[in-house]
Length: 255
Image (tube, rainbow, N blue to C red; front, side, top):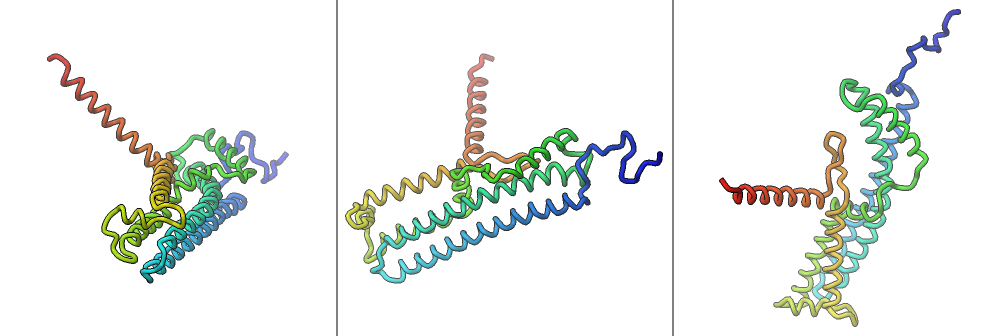
């Protein structure tokens, strides 16, 4: 009996994923890229709002010596709200970016160069995990990690600008303060003493720094995510300590 053209010969059933030219995979890849691009544009919009708000309020605060310094604290509050909004958008973007990277790693790269990359079993396993992940709408990245990453990438610069402008406002207006004590006294808001306000701002700055250093990195090398800045610092410290201990042991060893 003659074999239909649609039926493969016995023993020749393809074991690799479908070819890149298949309509399903082409449209699926386009959809994943499109979703990631849309969420990236939404994040860019939030960053633009934060930058415009910061510029407007800093200009207003320094446009009149009588303008209260609390305007800059309000700018900081607005930027925190924008940061939370953008972090939630980044969580969804990260969900689609993971799928995009999975396709690149286990589908596109093996198609372009079959001699390198993961083996057939690993490709099938990870594409199956990708298929299961399509039924997930809960982000993989936590909100704390997302906030820290957005601080490190964008909002840390805005926060530093506002902090510098706030300190400069306290020193300059309405007249030169002349000392740190006078600046702290001017930092008061209503019945709240200046020391409390300055302490709160310092605590928030320290919290932002910790979150930024602990946030995961989105950079990769050979398909492996690079460590966080905090992880890199700890690794460098451990290597330095190990070398110092080794040198000490070598110097103390009898000849």
